[in-house]
Length: 212
Image 1: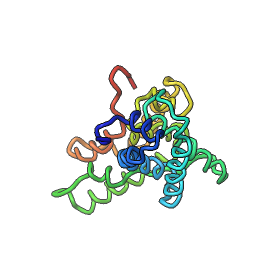
Image 2: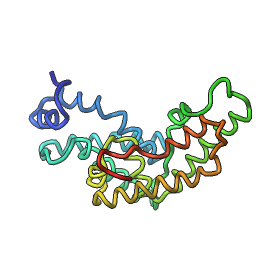
Image 3: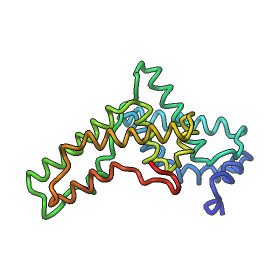
Image 4: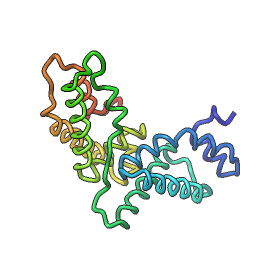
């Protein structure tokens, strides 16, 4: 069954005309790809346009596809290039960004801490995180969002972004440091553990053998 095959094999089968193989790839990767584009663009309309463009370019390049890297790397390399081209055409020096508020909210206080002051603190944390992410230099934000959404290793993020692994790691390290600094004013008292958990999420888990 196609659903049991790895991405590289599926792409090779699609190159040979197996449409079902493409459908499996699409179902596997559509969600993280869309989230990546949405967090960069901060616009559902732009994310939808880029989403269609990425898949269109992948389809157009299928006959030239070779298994030289993970399919994820190949896909997010196309996505990165499409996004950067879009922002250059739009005259924007950098992509806007957003954070997935629903995911962050899961780390924030729920009952019995649903007091107005707790809700206000959580809302401010969400807003400050979004602004801090948006304020990052484009290359640092891109590295952070790629790491969070794509599941790529640092080496693969480097390939997708057209830089070395060390450069990708440096960009990610700077992004994490700036985000944590920006949220430092929210660093809670020991009793505010849910808020502490939310701030602690601004630290990607290191890949095996890779120190961030």
